[in-house]
Length: 268
Image (cartoon, rainbow, N blue to C red):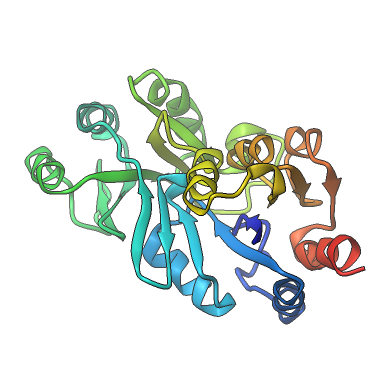
């Protein structure tokens, strides 16, 4: 097995959230050459499994590396959960902000509102405590509408013990980046969670070396993939610090960068 770990947003899919026919064909040809395309994403399991079906993928790494999943037998290979007390502290930090809170557990996503938002059910502390008593939360996503307030939250979130922001809207990292969405987000996980660790757990389970693996991505949470795998590919639309450590820079996600890399480097 020669795994290719592929990020989703800004990498596998174009800006219309499509996996193009060109990219699907290239991945199919790579599979025929013995490569194993594996989605490695911050997206939750229920969402990412739909993408796996499109690509006929056998394995999945999701929730920013907190869950490694075998799609064939429908069971977890590896799971890592967030500290419950840290989630409670995060709730108190966010409860007066107008944000959407997404809790990811039991292979599903649950959406709630905080502050004055009315789009989803308001999450009360007692409801959150009940969830935490029943389930192990692997990732929390904070989705806000005000750019400046979201920018100031990152440092406060990262001061909470045992959790970290693993990924966020690119413009929250670099304000010069275009604000292409009406909302801004943070993915929050255990400090032990990363895509790189998810890959290491997968490789340990499969008895293969990460040095024989390829990683393709564009954002900050893909850096741990690059540091773990033997060969790294940055998209043309990747952040500058992601490009700087990549072994190869391909075209952007609007021009089938994943397919271009496969055609140029794996099929010749």
